[in-house]
Length: 224
Picture 1 (spheres, rainbow, N blue to C red):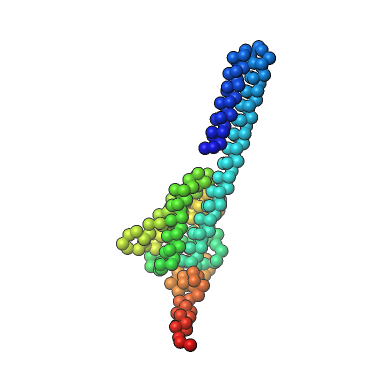
Picture 2 (cartoon, rainbow, N blue to C red):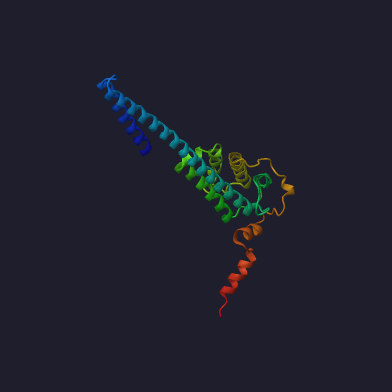
């Protein structure tokens, strides 16, 4: 807004100078001076405005790309906690894992909370930073898919695991396209360490199994 006002102010000033040139007469030395000065100022203002626009556009694209990477990394981490697999997965592996999500795969509160945070953050980005989001083609589509996760606790019944997997699949594919990452699905049968059991989710999320935490809590409750 400030840039637009400054540009408009200089253009108005240039127009006044050119008008003075006509008022003094184009054939007079003073008129020629004013017309040369006015046209020179118009050229400078337009050049600066165009360069500034390109810089602003590049800044928004860089910010949009960084936000897209942050969103994709958040999805990769949450999917790893939920389904397992290698700690560092590319998008084709993430899509392969999501394609294998079963109807009965457990979705505990702590894993559900990861997905809920992803959905809430995606909705906030759409509402609070639309210029940066729209600067990267396809990023908005990915966020719109992921934003659906923000309502996964709104209903009376939990969102089915397969539906959560489909939402994540669509969001991951859109983010991968926006960032130029592979979108061909890796065969889930070839992905090592996949284990969506509750115990494995606890170990990946908390860093230890439930039995270890239970033993630790019982030890802490024992009197000295």
